[in-house]
Image 1: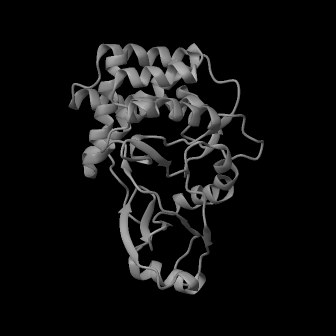
Image 2: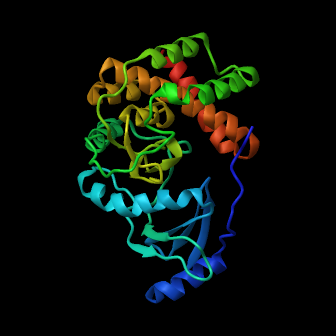
Image 3: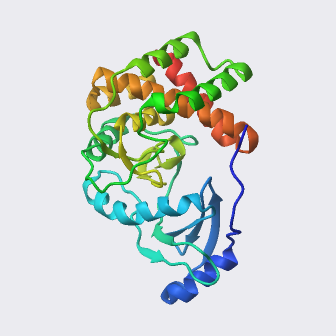
Length: 293
């Protein structure tokens, strides 16, 4: 069982301050505050209006380049803010990879604070605006947006682990997983976030402020993103309102359930090692899903 991977490069405030001073000297005097280290990146607040995103693992570098290339294209068409880069950082003698300066968004993850009931239509509109046909040169992700059958062995291994360790895997979830595997596949590659769970949906005073962490952005099966409905929305009626407005076809809805099972099991299994917040988020997702089946 693997938790959050270790960093391959030690990214601290001293390093980031030196990068900013060397490449964006007009920002060198802005206060720099460490925020968090995720699976792939380390985040800092820069001044009052900016964030610095710096890869901590080599696997994140191409993902960050995809953000730098495509978020400025998507941002104008979406009804919720996304972190299109304000400045681009380069590799140098002190640090081997590109990095970004992004806008700062107020709020906490939707796993920590509730979303107002009135936000359901806006969130559904965000998904509809995002999930349009992607261009031929859009990136592809080998583990998100692919047919569930391509990930079956890995997902079922995690499902078995979670089944053995918790009471989260109900008979209804087991049946839903089989239906998801059997559902017809998507016939069009659409833009998708790829990692749209509650921690990546920032909320302040009940209002969704931004959707962040777009490293897995890709063209693929947009049903992948729909697991966010169970991840971020606590009230069953809110989840139903989102699906009513988004109106997925039956096969997409079954695949969305499959991706919710996959993401819930991943968060619970990996989170139990060294990230309790992820584990709690995954458990909440699976409980909400079970209530809707």
